[in-house]
Image (cartoon, rainbow, N blue to C red; front, top):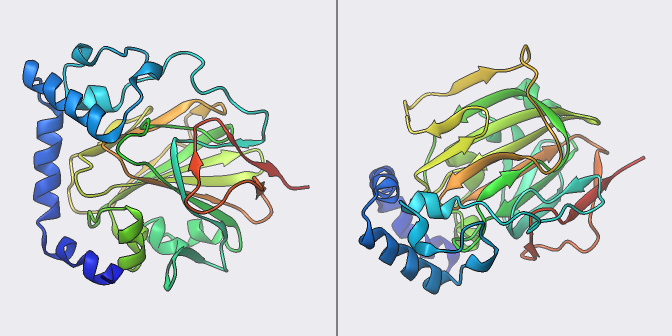
Length: 282
C-alpha cells in the first residue's frame, strides 16, 4: 500500500473533534478507571516507569498528569556539547535548509516561511541554515528542553490541520509540518536567533510552554502572536521550555553556519534528551 493511500482516511476523519474529545478525556480524573487506562498504556507501549520521578501508576490523577510526568533527578544528564538534544524520540530528518526549503521526506518539502506562520522576515534569518525534525512516540518522555541557552523573544500560535505526524504520514502528506497546528517559539542565542516549533497532531490535546502555560486550547482559528523582547525571559541549556499533552514533533531552525550535527546522527535514529546534538562551527 502506498503512503498516500495509507493516510487517505486521515483526510476524512473529523480530526479537530477527535482531538478536542481526547483532550477532555486525558484531563479527566476518573480514579480507578484512569489508573487502568494508564496501566494499559504503559504495557501497550513499553513505557519505562522506573525512570519517572514517581513510578507509581496509581499516583497520577489524570492521563495528562502521567503523560507529562517528570523524570528522576539525573535521569537525563547533559552532554558536554554546544547543542544537546531537546527531547526523547527519533530523528525524522535533519540537515541543510536549501535556501528556504526544508526536507520532509522523499518528494516532499516545505518552506521556512510557511512553517513559522507566514512571516518572511523571520524565515529569512534561517536561509541556507540548518534544521532538525524530531518525532516523539507515545512511549517517550514528553517534556521539551532547551538545546542551548537562549532569550525568548516571541511566540506564535499558528492554526492548522491535525494530521498524525508518524513516519508514514510524513511520507504521505505534503508539507505536513507546515500544515498542522503549531507553536513557534523564537529565541536569541549566542550565535543568533533560533526557533523551536512544537507541532500538533491528531489526538494531541494541547501544547504548553513554561512561560505561558497551555497555549491551545483555545483554538480561535486565527494566528496569535506574543512579543517578549521587553521581558528578560532567559533559559539555560537543558531547562524545560514546554511539553506536549500527548505526543508530536519538534522542528528546530538555526542560522547558516550555526552548528554542525553530531556525526552519529542518522534519520530514524533513536535520541534521548541531553545527548550531544552538535557543536558550534568556527
